[in-house]
View (cartoon, rainbow, N blue to C red):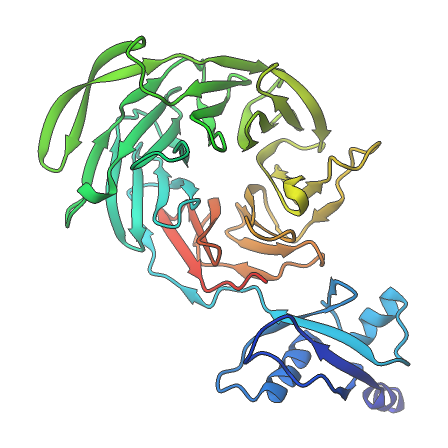
Length: 428
C-alpha cells in the first residue's frame, strides 16, 4: 500500500506546447501533474485547460516521440530526467470521427482508389468497376471484364479532360475507360472500355498509373511487369466492342493495346506495383522481394528482401523515399533505401494478427500510413511510435484493400462486399 501511495504522490512539472491554432492553444505556463498519468489523462488535462464545449482527443510527443505508456514509464525508458520542467507537444489525435454509410456491392470489394478528391473507385469480384461520388452514390459502372477485378486506378494524364480509369483483372487483361462526370444524371451510367490491354499470360494482380504521364504499369502472376500507353492510337488493332451510355447502346470499336516494355526479374507473382516518379516503378512479389525499376533501361536498381511473400507495397513518407510493404505475416515493414549498406527495415509494426493486404502512405505527411489485413482491421500508424494510433474495425470479414481519400478519410473494401468510408481523421 505504501508503494502505491508513493507512486501516486510523484508529480512532474510540464509545459504544454502546440502548433495548433485557436481554440486549441493552452496558456504556456508550467503545471504540475501526476507522473502516473497516461495519454488519456494528459488529454483530459489539456481539455480542462482549453474549456472546450466538446472534448477533443489529443496525442502527445516528447522530443518528437509519441507517448504510448504512462508518463513515468516513458521518461524512464528514454532516460529523461523528471527534475526539470518537461515540454510536451500535443496534436489532435489521429482517429476517425465519423463512419459513413456503407456502399454494398454484389461480391467482394477487392480494389479501391481514393486518389481523386471527387470520386472513389472500387473494383469487385463481380468483374465490374464502380465510381462513387459519395457514400451510396454510384455514378458509373465500368463493364467488360470476364473475371474478378484485382486492382483499379485513376490514369489521367496531366491536363486531361474527364476521368480515365485503368482496371486489372484475373481474366489476364487490363481495360481503360474514359468517363465524363457530367454525363451521369440520376441513374447509373454503364461504360465500356475504349482500350483492352492484352499480353499477360496469367492473372493481372496490380495496376498503377505513371505520375505526370500517359502510361500505366501492371504486375501479374506471370512474374512480369508490363508498361502500357493509355493514349488512343489508330495504329493499334480495333476489335468490336460496346459502350453503353444510360439506356442507349452504341457499337464502338475498342482498341487492343500491346505492352511497350516488359520488366523481367521477379521469380513469383508480382502482387503490387506503384509508380511514384516519372521513370521509376516499385514492385513487390511473392518471391519475398521489393524491387525498384528504371523504366527507360528496364533494369532493377534496388532489391529489398523481407523473408515473406509480399502482397502490397507503397512509397512515401519523408522525402517520398520510404518503402512500406506487407504480406504473408502480420508485420508491416518500412525500409529507407537512402541508408547505405543495409537492407534491413528501419521500422516494423506488428499489431495485426493475420496477413497484410494493403498499405498506403498519407500523401501530405512524413509520418502517417495505414495498413489493412485479413484480420478485418485497418490500422493507422505514425512512425514516431510502435503502437497503432487508431484501429478501424468496421468490416465484418477480411479487408482486401484500403486507401486515403481527401486527406482526412480512409476508404476500404473487403470480403463483406462493402465499401467503407471512415472520415474526420486529423493528420497534423
